[in-house]
Image 1 (cartoon, rainbow, N blue to C red):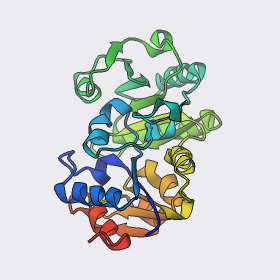
Image 2 (image 1 turned 120 degrees about the vertical axis):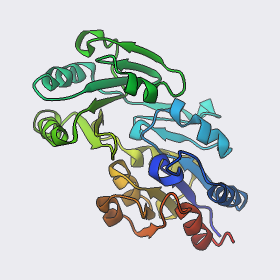
Image 3 (image 1 turned 90 degrees about the horizontal axis):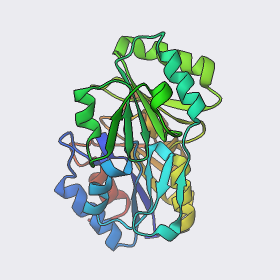
Amino acid sequence: MEKHLIVLDLDGTLLTDEKIISEKTKTTLFKAKEEGHEVMIATGRPYRASEAYYKELGLTTPIVNFNGAFVHNPVNQRWGVFHEPMDLRVVRDVVEACQDFQFHNIVAEILDDVYLHYHDEKLLDIFSFGNPAIQTGDLRTYLPASPTSVLIHADEKDVQTIRSHLDDVHAEVIDHRRWGAPWHVIELVKKGLNKAVGIRKAADALTIPQSRIIAFGDEDNDIEMLEFAGIGVAMENGIKSVQTAANEITASNNEDGIALFLEQRLKLV
């Protein structure tokens, strides 16, 4: 079997709803590595919130974080570091414009530093994973540098209105995605960035052709990755647009969908 690159989204894909990697899936991924295949993670999470899973799988490959805005190899600094933040002036304009809409909070991340527009205990619980430096203040004046990612938290009924404004005013400089339930969050990154951009860098370095990339995903931010991969696989729990973009559909994240697909496709049984 020729070497494949197996690309894994985390939430709703590799991870069960309890945010763990099942034993069956873990065993199958180790078996794939023993057979000579490469395994990597591509996630919207920052590295600090994905590092534990990277280590649990014993990976040595590059990792894609912030949906492609940060790509590096944690165990090989010579591989290079690719960090493409948004323009600080644009972010300040976005925060200013949000004052005309209904929203709960705005969070900016500069790699592992977190900045909250308003103090928010619920968001603090989410963003404290990995013990980042967290500060609170008006992002229009408080944000010290260009952020890797910006998150706008709003009620579900207000999300589309804000996204429409972003399309009308900032489409040339930022891309935005929507998180799935229960959090109604709009995630912003620099224009042109997505998971496929980072995966291409990794595949080129590993000399694995696009046709032998198997990517698994379930959400809006996985679509480009599944379309780029030679074999794009949507989870059964994935949203409809992801399943439409994929070549294949496997079982859900709670039913070892990754393991079942790889066992059959790569003959790992």
